[in-house]
Length: 143
Image (cartoon, rainbow, N blue to C red; front, side, top):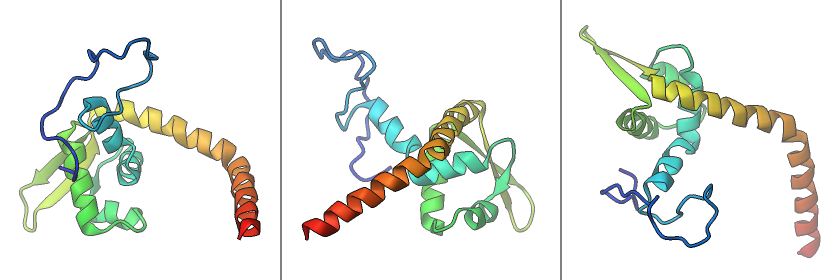
């Protein structure tokens, strides 16, 4: 479990929030929706889910494909995704043991959402680059 994550899930949907936007989730740390968003929006989780689209990969294959991820971080990410029902881990009884990971049907539904996010990013990457450069110029001039 991630540091700072509540051990007991809570349902925050019934929380009285007055005239709050019904599409806005409860941002308190103990809210289950926030905990799930924290997990699936994590950069390593996004990359693992993207790589597992329609295929099974071994741990070493995932690690080789994900630039910059440590063995420990990939292990933690895979365990969390498995716990959330997004990834299935299969151990083949051979020597040495062969372990493969694949998306569950639930994980597959999330992949479609991630694909939309990547499509948006690709469509707007130039605008973002221009905005970053303008911000960096303003920050440099302010010094």
